[in-house]
Image 1 (tube, helix red, strand yellow):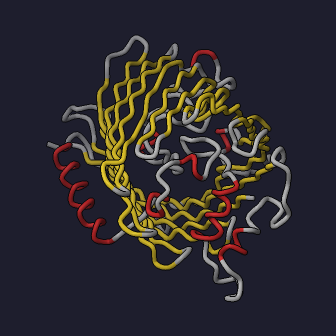
Image 2: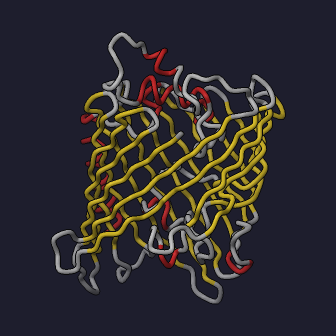
Length: 394
C-alpha cells in the first residue's frame, strides 16, 4: 500500500510539472547525447569545447555582457584561458564545489556545516581533430570522512578521482578504459539523492555499499535515436579489498518521440561484505527550449555477507522551471523503502530551490529540503535543511 501511494504521488507530480514546463538537463535544447558536451559519453567529468561554449552561449545569463556582444562572441571566450586558443593536447580543467548546510534552522538542535564537495584539477589530451583518441585525468583534494568539510586541519589528501583513455574503435563505437563512474541510470549530480545514495554510488571510500568510481572498461554504442553502454568494473583502487565491488552493468535509452527518451539500467556487483543487484527505468522529456523533466524508479536487492536478502525500491522525479536565461526554479520529490515489508519505513525527501548561472563558469544553488520518515512502528520528527552551494568550473 505504501508503494502504491508513492507511485500515485509521483504520477500526480509528473502531470503537474508537465504543465509547469521544467528542465533538468539539456534534452530541452535538443542535445540528447551526453557525448555532445562531455568527453565521457555517459555524462559527468570535464566538459569538451562544445560543452563549454554551450554553457556560455545558451545556459548562463548574459546580464553582465554588453548588448552589442553576440552569443557567438561570448562562446568564443569559454576556453580555460578565455579566448586564447590552446593546442588539442592542452585542455586543463579546474572545479570547486562547496555547500553550506543548515540543519533544522531556528530549532534547538540547529547545526551549520560547510562541506567541501569537490576540489579538483585535471588535463585532457586529445590526439586528433575528430576526438577519436584522447586521455583525461583528474586529481582532487579529498577530505577525511570523519571531518567532512574544511575544519582546522584543512584538506586531508590528494588523489586521482578519475582517469581514462577513450577510443572510437569503430564508427559510433566508443571504448573507455580507466577509473570512471559506474554506468547506471541518470547521472544526478546530487550524490545525496535517494537515486544515488542507496545504489552504492558513494563519494567516500571504504563504505560497505560501494563507491561510485571504479576501475574498469566501458563499451558504448551511440546512434542518433539510441545509445547503450556495457560496463565491466573491478573496484576502486583506494578502497580496502574488503569493500571493492566487482561486477557488470548495462544501461541504454532510445528516443520514443522528439525530445522524449526512455531508458533502462541493470547492475550486479559483489564485494566481501555485500552483494547488490539493481534494476531501473528512467525517462527524460524536453517540453520546450529550456524546459524538460526526468523521472527514475528502480528496485534494489541487497544481500549482506551472512545475512538475508533485502529487496526495496526508490523513485525520483526532478524538474527545473526556467524563469529567465540563467535562472531557474528547481524542484524534486523522492521516495525510498529498504524492504517491501510493513515494518520497513517509507523515506520521503522534498526539495525546492533556485538554480542560477549568473555568469559562465559559475553556478549557485539555494535549496530548501524536507526529509520525512513514515513508519507504522515509530515516529520521527521531520528534518529541515537550507542549503547554499557554489560551483566554479574553469
